[in-house]
Length: 433
Image (tube, one colour):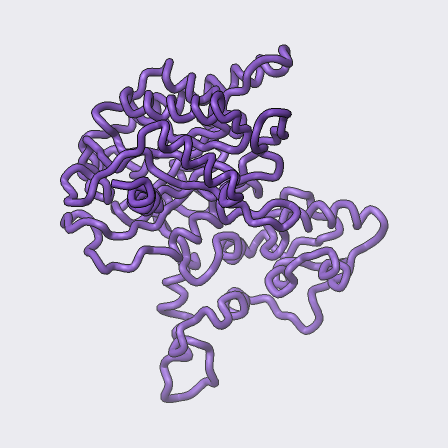
């Protein structure tokens, strides 16, 4: 089999592994070497100068000894199996780089023979790329659960970022759908990476010549929709991972049916892309806006509102905290106002030192008044002509997201659809009474 046929199969198999993020490192070029990580990241990210960053995303092999039912590369699946040698993959990466097709490498693998054997092949590939070809660009490599800690440490010294995929949010789902895996196997390398990164930060602060260990940190991925866990369970797990393991990112991947297992969604079922999108929005609130998972969701309302983003949904359920006066509200509360982002909150804090802000000033600063106007006052006044009621704000925030038959319409004695906002839609939104 020629190398291009291998590449076609193994890049196609790698598409289910999600990790679109900027690199987080800033290593420049050096004489006699190729590549750098300045402004670099994963494919479909954009550098500060507007460049779209590209990356070779590929598996070392799609052979796998595990039988994870949600995975297209499971050992029980009848599919064509191929494997790159470390030499082939290193040469291919550098050939693509020289042609300006890529700026880095995202390398994962099925489990060939054993976790240690697979990791040794990954390590040999990275050694060739770094030492033989002197490549200084971005490399993200997967840490295989069950691998010897010494091998993981060597991989971390060569990679910019490492990740251990949790995949399913609970031990029960892992037991049913991935019997070869357990949470302990996954958390062990995650814990090792966390402690190694922390120790390396100390070493770099005291010794300039200390080698960097995974300077861009670690991440993980969870599959959404393959198992019955709620958004609340998924978001609570992500919150715990950020707190305990200091992850850079948790990625959420809408499950695309690739199996006929009765425990999984049937083939042809559409992936829950909107649910994935809402989880990313909520994840952003956890990382940058000071929210907690239990503030956004709870046992009574365990899933995201499909018609409204999590921040607006939270604000609508806590109207007792609003409106906030933008000229006096603390920074932490500004961040919780729909339509106000981190940058615009900082601009408000700076601008209001020079005088009171008006709605027109907020618009110039970058506040999205279409959403924010229902939750703020400027110098004690609401936006002109605005009345704040829960149903009214709900109608305005949903807007054209309502299904056609559920949109607000002129009241009629005979058309019951106008009452839906007080019934079915209200229930769908999870608005608490």
